[in-house]
Structures are given as structure tokens and as C-alpha cells.
Length: 261
Image 1 (tube, one colour):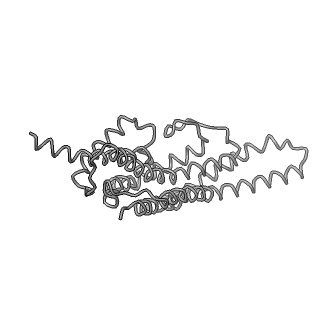
Image 2 (image 1 turned 120 degrees about the vertical axis):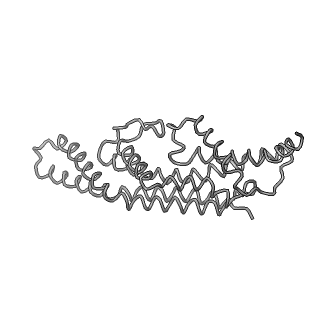
Image 3 (image 1 turned 180 degrees about the vertical axis):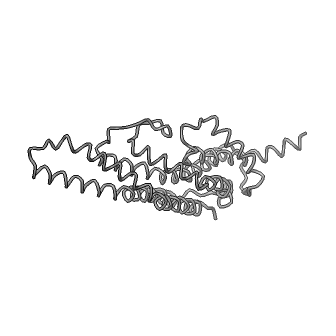
């Protein structure tokens, strides 16, 4: 009886730290962190994954003997999980940002819809591209990468041995910058095409001043934007490949930067 209690006392800190890191990951990983997944389900999933992974992962030799050390280690594990998931979430949001750029250029920036993944109103083009990228992600079994990440991060960063360094924050900030650049690149063809349409409308207004150009501009730009969106679906595989590779690169670099000595 007492031997069992002694073993539980030794195991519980590592078990708690494993659960905390998995909770941080599930709070920020794309799809798994969306509000459509309730907190109760997310906590249950984190607890279930902890029971599954805990016997398989390497436990750190660091001993936690005081409450302050346990609190510090808990905060560190939570930060590691949040940083790993947040970077991938930012990369996924690049498609949403690209849709916002295109929607503004189309003239429907005010046509917002309720996004169930964030419980906020976003431009309708952002909603369309975000749903397409999620559907495409599942169609190629990309979610297996996230499930693998739940285990692989413990292989690279054993429980209790992670290090939060300046390079980790720098990688996260650089990922945000790269995601913004990707969003602009994804939306650039549509923006350029719509700028050409704007230029043609401007020439038409100069050549035919008697035409009520304002009655023609908005429907024409919306129709042109819809044509661009349909054409963009053919290029979606190439764009998604950039996102998928960026996600894998970020997870690898982030885990290496937080790997203890």
C-alpha cells in the first residue's frame, strides 16, 4: 500500500507536466484549438493522450522537491506547448489574411460572416479559403502530423528539460513575419488582376463620362473576384504545399531551439 503511494508521489509531477504541455498544445494547434471544440473535450483529449504517451516518453532526471519548483516547471511546460502550437496556428491563419486582402480589393470587406473557428466575424473570402484549407488538410491526412507532434515533441524535449530561450521567441516572431509574407503572396495574383480591372474601369470612365460608372464598378469587381477565386482553387495544392512545409519547418526549428543540453 505504502509502496504504491510512494511510487505515485514520484510519478505524479512528471505526469502533471506531461498533461500541462499537451494541454498547451491542444489550446493552440490549428483545428484542435478552434472554439467549436469545447474546453471539456479538449481537456479530456489531453488527459487521454497523457495516459497513452506517459509510459512511452523518456522522463527527465530532474527532481522536483519543492512547490515553487513544481510551479516553475509547470509554467515552463505550458509555455513550450503554447509556443509549439501558436506558430502552427499563425501559419494556418495566413490563408485567412490572404482572403481578407482579396475581399478588401473586391469591395466586399464589409461582407463579414460569423466564423465558427474563432467565434468572430471575418470577411467572407477569408472564411471560404480557411474552410478550403481545413478540408484539404484533412483530405491529405495532414492531421496525422499534429498527432505525431504530440509524441515527437517529448522525444526532442523530454519533460522537465526544455529551455525557453531568446532564439525560441525569435523563431516564433519570424514565423509571424513569414506568414504575413505568404498571405500577401497568396493574394497577390488576385490583387493584381483586380487592379487591372480598376484601371480598365478608370479608362472607361474617362472615355465614356456619361456612363454611371459607380453602378458598374461594384458588380464587375465582385464578379471578377469570384472568377479569380474559382481559378485559385486549381493552384491551391501548390499554395498548401508551402503552408505544410512551413509548418513542418517551424515545428522542427522550435523544438530544436527549446531542446535542453
